[in-house]
Amino acid sequence: MELVFGKWVFAFSLSCWLIFSVALSVEGLHGDAKVRGVNLGGWLVIEGWIKPSLFDGIPNGDMLDGTQVQFKSVTLQKYVSAENGGGMGVSVDRDVAFSWETFTLWRVTESEFQFRTSQGQFLSCDGEGCSLSATAKSPSSPETFVIERNNNGRVHIKLTGGTYLQRHRNSFITIEDFNFLYRHGINTVRIPVGWWIAYDPDPPAPFIGGTLEALDNAFSWAQAYSIMCIIDLHAAPGSQNGMEHSASRDGWTDWPTSDHVSQTLHVIDFLASRYAKNPAFLGIELLNEPSAATVPLDILISYYKQGYQIVRKHSSTAYVIMCQRIGNADPLELYQANIGSHNIVVDLHYYNLFDLFFVNMSAMDNIQFIYRSREAQLQALNSVNGPLVFIGEWVNEWNVTNGSQKDYQDFGRAQLEVYNAASFGWSYWTLKNDRQHWDFEWNIRNHYLQLGNSPKTQIFNTIVLLGLVCTWLYLHHML
Image (tube, rainbow, N blue to C red; front, side):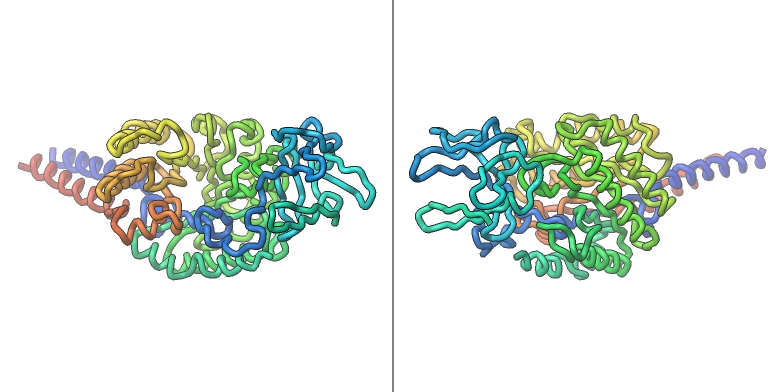
């Protein structure tokens, strides 16, 4: 009888060990169960709202990429118009300005610009005496014009830099930031990069070299503090969602074309081959926030499958991360796609912002939404036999305008409690930001976000508790 009981206790202990060995599912982390990460946003992919002062003092600073302009002839008192919105000729005969009379700027220098029509073509004039047209599909010299401005708001249009970004890369994120993250229990950084990094140090205009050297530095600093790196392709050629962080110059989404997809796969190959053997390399995110409105699911899945194979060519263990489409898209569409066989992750971005649904919510409403909606979705996805779940972006900010420090602490605590359950982990957006509640460092230093124990400590405490329970069961049966 004693022998049988001894086998039962051993089997029970072994089953307990197996349960917790499964929970430690993220390979490569230094002693932690899951990713506890912070995004290094606004560093290698510039987003003006994160640090607006970067753009102070730029000549013609009100005429940056994406600025929409309309031109009215002083003599004719008529607006310049691209007929049919583009693809045809140009006239100066409109009394009122609407879409055909609105052009989006592509900035070449502080005084040289290209003009995109509402249908996507560029204004073109091939030399003196030419007729102005709106038929060029891409800009070059004939599509580049000089704008001379005077103080009364008038301009002359004739036929025919960037050093602040380099200072930003050297000072915005430093090794001291990695020290800060390490001291506060962060084990991973998610680093947004742009497609032009594959062509560094001489990327195509308007991009500026230096991002590759900065990324190399990040990997070195990460190794020094036992932090892992996720490379996130934040900006794809042609733009995958039309927003500034996707390198769209004017809001257009041109990524879902065979040429751009092929070019993007080249970038993934470049990054995977360069960092696959680096001890700090945890994985690569193939594309950030593709738009459900403009990126067809079949094209995205095909790209993800090809990207997975490229990463596997260089590494059998790196995590391949696929971002959910933003907009009206169900994350289950990626679970049903059979992208790859192992170390696959689906990235969800959870913001209680950017939607009218959250506008009139109180502090308690926001907190309850985290527990009722976010937690339910995470539990459902965790239980699916497929990719791991990653909350790759979230923030301790909301639409509540009068939230107290305690309100923010409660909101942050709710998010951490729920997002800690994600099978791969989470990553806060972002480390530094001029807007305080988006700034991870400010939140920590001012006690608006309280991280608490790391998953490693939680698991240790759970194992200790389980050990006490097992011991009690053993003694109870012995007695």
